[in-house]
Length: 203
Image 1: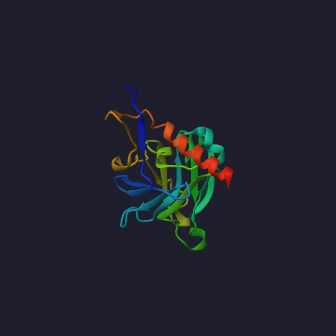
Image 2: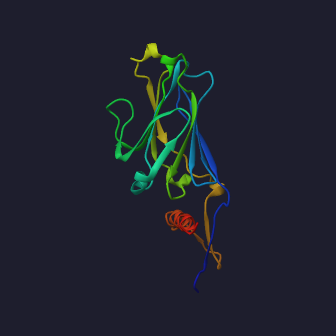
């Protein structure tokens, strides 16, 4: 008997968060936005890492063919970089990543470097989702906030982006009750992007 597959997905944008680090913990929250971008919110835990601020975030991206059309925006963003395994964080020992954001250190202006910030990752034509980052490696560099400590190296927190919440995962079922595994995990995001691209073209 032929199985007719009914694909179901969460209709509204989803979010996921996780906390990384030991001596200094940073909470990372990923949110899908209604217009097809993904926001990355970074928050250093209160009372930890006194004198330190966010310096740079470098990370990998699922589809490296899309890197040329990605962009990052945010209130503390100083510079953005994209390139297949070519983006490096502070220091020369780190391997190359696909994407990078450097944050402003405003100590010279009498202000403090950020202990929390928001970034918006977007593509110029396609919709992005949590799946574009899930499981991919990142490296977050923390550095002294004050200008008179500029020679200090700070330190780095490394990890992998959290996956989509289990309750929000796509489910594939057949009319005969069969449940399919991850066969469509890569197909569905492409279908979603194609639909958005066609809708934009029609507009």
